[in-house]
Length: 65
Image 1 (cartoon, rainbow, N blue to C red):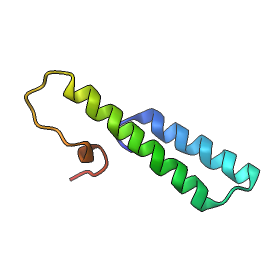
Image 2: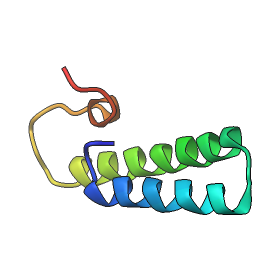
Image 3: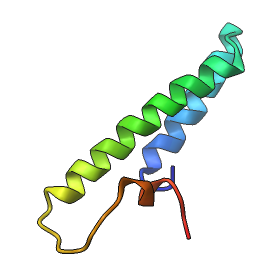
Image 4: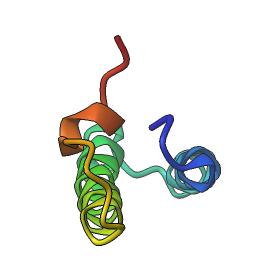
């Protein structure tokens, strides 16, 4: 989640929305997991199209060392 600052804003908005509407926490977690996969894929595609010679894994955006 540290790769795209807007993702944190989205997480906050969805968390608030789910709390207001009374949806289950597990549903929120499933939504966020799917959004994280989309975000990771988009970051991967952007980097792979940049022509960089540095090897990149989409997992690099999910885990910090």
